[in-house]
Image (cartoon, rainbow, N blue to C red; front, side):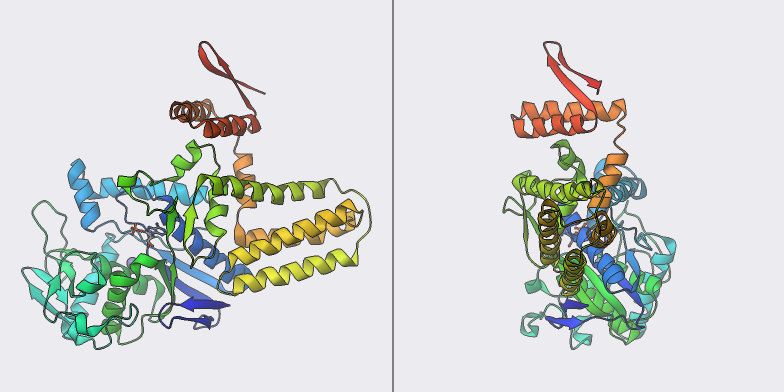
Length: 470
Ligand code: AMP
Ligand code: ZN
């Protein structure tokens, strides 16, 4: 298995330190809103990394993905709504679990919340260690990490030390590379904000300390094998995680750093002001299935930018159908002996698929191999060169492909649970109505077709739309 390591800017052979178990941490959602499809590009890429480590490289994986449930944004959101922080974040945590399941993500071994008492304790302990080793100072009730005490600070982001202002500090969790400063570990709380005292005095954790403490508490001794996250986290978040962890433990923090590129929407950054922040329910309301989104988001290499378009979703849907149509065709092959050419083609495709996945998760090339095999086997079947005795080996290969890609199994689950309730049908009809209202007739038609496939017929009449089961 080869992975691109952001720390060395190189592709490297990857083997976990103990040769068997990959100890992997990824920064999870900041739970002040429902995750959007950009966030899920990161989590789907992580899922593909996990599956490739397991099903292609044969390792075991222990994966920790946290919830950032206390930071500047969550506190501001709870305050705005006048609800306790825990109640506010619980909503988005529930939605995240729902969305992960809908996307067919394998569950992480651990999903710690920053505010779990054991995690707050671990953060406080790490800060106390940093204090003891002389890496901190206190000011106005907050504790800061003094980056001058770490000569190689900035290694991950390749910071230019000239630009760092000695002695200046920054209180916010997010800031630019040009503003590299002493950053806050433990924040003095303002009245009305949640506060803890686990040994370093009253306050609340800064964002960066959360991940260092949770990763080492749950994965064990540094260095962990893989630390992953979206590309925007390289600076300051991951740089600061490295500083805290390495100064506290005296050891490297993570051996391999994996960063996933961003998802754009119609070539623009996703942002609330542009109105292009989509969630899973938004995708479903356009008449698409979640499995289609999963396919689209993993069809490009994780280190290249991916541009989300509705046309791209339609193409992804076509690709899935080519795959599932072929599997359905296998059911119709009832006679005939085995063909050496089939076994050979299947074996070569399996090797090429695994080779592409092991080459820094080249999902685009791996999918290319899948569809090349579909084409070759359809041609063979047309010419009577695919017998019933070939089918088992063909099915086994496609099952292996889908262990990693995870789209066809998800599609089957969607189909199986398609015994729609009336409330589900009402929701589809509402979405279709909305689509028509905004004159998106393609979406409206897609929703009608989707319902038809699920066994529900819509009839538009003067009294509005009525439905009946097929
Ligand atoms: P956040 O909730 O902002 O902390 O983000 C959760 C994860 O999603 C982080 O790993 C981010 O880097 C990642 N992320 C945020 N926006 C995008 C995007 N547009 N495309 C891909 N990943 C993203
Ligand atoms: Zn993190």
